[in-house]
Length: 403
Image (tube, rainbow, N blue to C red; front, side, top):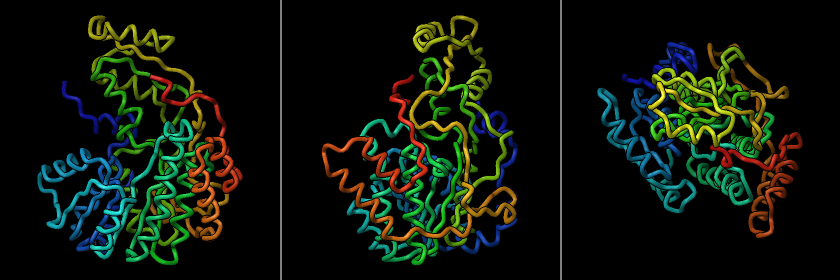
């Protein structure tokens, strides 16, 4: 049996035959063409699921230059093979992938040698809630999402681009985890530079089967004949990998200064991870069989393929730190335009936080990380001092404790 993942996502996850943003792209095609054609483009974190989709959506409009920076050397190699192996796909002569961190001195030299770019998009981020187990993982997360962004923005304004875009997350709206809070602070950092260049962002939810996601893990478990585990009470919005790149392209190119784009989705389009797991197994010819514990499911996995294609699964309630019970793309205090586009909402008229206020919290992070006695709880207090409504609840359990 031939399994087509994109068809599965369309039918069983997003439940749309056509991209949610097809009409918005069609309606704005001429503006997209004019704004991208013959422009120089820098994509940071471009080897990941969203960054690579952004690139694939941008290239048909024929930019003259594409520079991609990503810490994943293997990811860059695959991105390049993918672009060059796709029939009829345009890749500019000036295409350069670099396995490099955007906070490294070598990156600064590269950026300055190129004298900046017309379009800059940043997808480099810690984006999983599981990335906040202890003080060490929290520091790495905040260094990447917040402190490196601050450093990069100072570099960016040496040669201001026509457009700068940075991907955010729905978890930045009323955050309950440090990852979401870090992206909320990142938004404030980016918009504090909005008097120097056009900056905007996008918030959206789960990208179906993106790198490192739980659904992508389902495929790995099946390939290794291991049981599948998933929460059955967590309902989430999903977009396809293609749609994730389209949202970012539309926000980057069409967005006015100080705007955040998000997909217009309603609760009827939400689904659970356990439902995706069961439908994936059925699509592959397996019959999911529920077990009451992870240990029982692991033991039963030894018989996969022997008992009428039965496949062991363990579904449970969510009980880990940082999991939000619901998803939202904006808060009551934000001004939202739901009429400008067919499938995109826009948070507009964002008032930048003062640079002094941002520098105060960033200095607190720097001082905390220079102290070997700093704890995760200390960092939570710093975040709470900046975001008073930060709803973090420590449950003393994280996703890495589960299968």
